[in-house]
Length: 414
Image 1 (tube, rainbow, N blue to C red):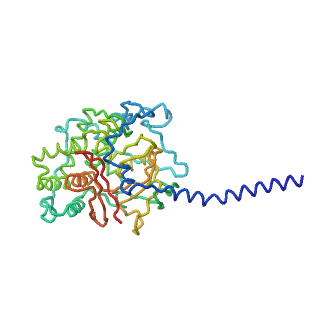
Image 2 (cartoon, rainbow, N blue to C red; image 1 turned 135 degrees about the vertical axis):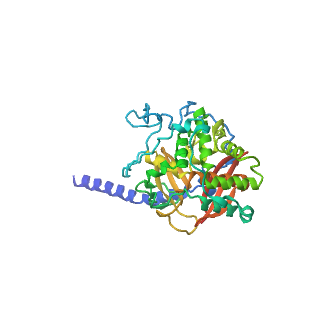
Image 3 (tube, helix red, strand yellow; image 1 turned 30 degrees about the vertical axis):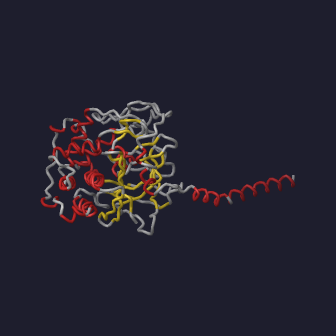
């Protein structure tokens, strides 16, 4: 018996020693998994944006159904149908809720949708906010016309609809991590709270109403309804009354890009952002708006999130527990650690269980501001557009797919 007991103790001690030595191996595995793609390619989720319209593959794990993201929401009544996946979960919309095992439950905030049904009406009969009282501020100076970075910074100054940290919202950045590290460094969500008043602002409200018009699975053909076309036109009409878009029009007109009337310019903007094009081997499956602001799930090879650079979409998806925030990414060079006041973030998260290893977003900026800077970079900038937005050194990346925006997003240049 004594010999048996000694043998059992030796086996147990050997097992403990083996487990204690495994930490170094785990750390080495994480270091060896650092991706080889360029920083911008990793951030965008595109290894090569110019190849997004080629290399058609059959998606064995997806169907060509017409179900859209959020399509199960009954937007007239505010109710929602349940899917066979989650019969007991409210408003699953065909998605599985991210399981946040170690994170505290979030306070859910109501998104005011009172006007959303009106947005489906023809754009010409809808009511809009008044014209922005901006006077000469929207006239580009000679200095701004000669230097794109100065024009982009002017757009930042014109964004009077931008939110103020601590007044309109609060974020908790959690802990930092390397891009290739797997562990979740955030104890909770990114957003602690957001003022409900934000969703009553016309451009924010109309922007939110567009987000559920898409099926984010890359390679599935989109079907656009007449009501959605009217939502798109009405959104462009609304933001066109703001100072950033007025400045954009005058700037593009001075450069000969927008050669027609203001109405022609609005049609050009609608086409640029909402016309469908091919991505993932399927024609009519994507658009600039869907990719940049809503996000897409790549189906080729290992699933991954591409696009998804908008903070409003992030907040809404996080409030529905579809997004699992996993921490901020350490700056590439020595720089300031982000805090609750930071409005340019580089982060990592999972969307419906699919990883976005690194993503960047401008927090609190208005929809009209983002539309303006990305449009200006597309027409008059290059792939890299360096600028200081307020106190933030930024590189606005802009990838083209022919005459369309393939992707556009900010990168912290520090």
